[in-house]
Image 1: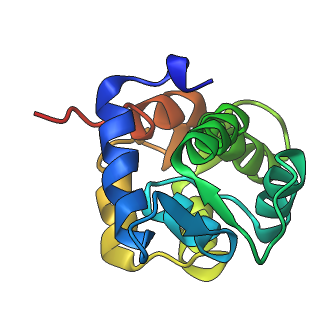
Image 2: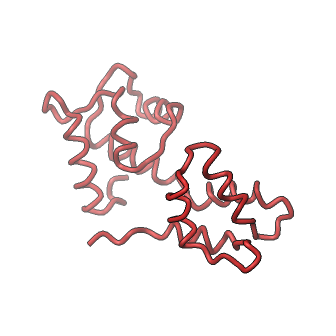
Amino acid sequence: MAKFLSQDQINEFKECFSLYDNNHKGKIKASDLITVMRCLGASPTPSEVDKHLLWHKIDRRAELDFSTFLNIMYRQMQQEDPQQEIRTAMAMIDRQKKGFIPVSELRAKLTKMGEKLSEEEVDDLLKEAKVGPNGIIKYEDFIRRITIPVTDY
């Protein structure tokens, strides 16, 4: 599965993996897997990590090599879809299912629920939104704007 990753991704993954390869044997502890994955921007739950380890028949107290790690990262990346996760959350706010949500309600959810954002962070996010004159945003456009990959020069 690593053949589907770019060389830049592999290099980035190797650099982070190496930081946790304490014995310089080309392996990391399975117990460090979730930390390494999160350092690289993935968002696995402990349950998902356990499933990855089970899939590869790796005990939680064992170690895994870089090749296995690449396969796990690839599988995790395939199952994460930030646009769909955000769309689902927005649809829960959009009770009338019209594709629009009030900015005030979005701000309240972002600052008071889940991984709470600061007012400044919400302001930065909302700069990307096209807020209508009535304080409503079309959330499909908003989702597209906030999930555009960042150009890495």
